[in-house]
Length: 211
Image 1: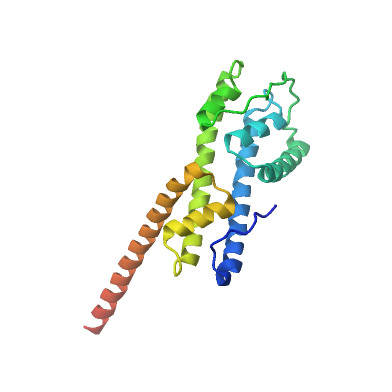
Image 2: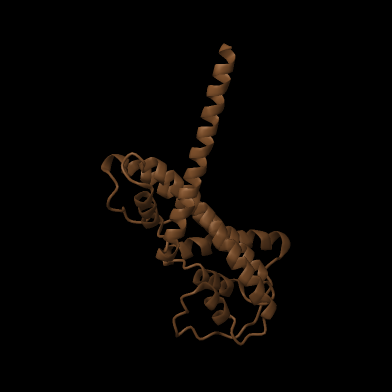
């Protein structure tokens, strides 16, 4: 998987650690993308060719060229292995679509535009649900790894700055950064509360043992 360029603002003594955390996060995101891309191709089996479904996936989830290449390679490899065992990829004849105009910005508008005028009404509903599930899964991965980033930088930066640096490292689009920040704050708050409760329990048990 291709690596992103170094991000400015990370202290030199933390660059190695954050580079490792960033690489782990990107790999986790790639695995998540591949899992859901395979599912999307399966949804279109017999109706839309696998390559076309991968193009749709890339447009819906804003994949850049590098991520798309990685997702496509691993997804096709996974589907190829399945095809050898179960013959899951069915040939489909579908007319070519004119991609001359850029896709709309919003995810749901993209879904409607991609399937506009087609007979696959049930498939569009399935893609709607799949898109929502995929975005939530990706956000969960982002939250987990952004929290790790925040912990690594907590002695130097506030959570807001740590999350912003994380977003730059993994290439998270701007429209999701505030949501990620709120999720990270919530997760950190839950962890702090759990730590306080456990500390209180340990202190209570210690006092009781002396009685």
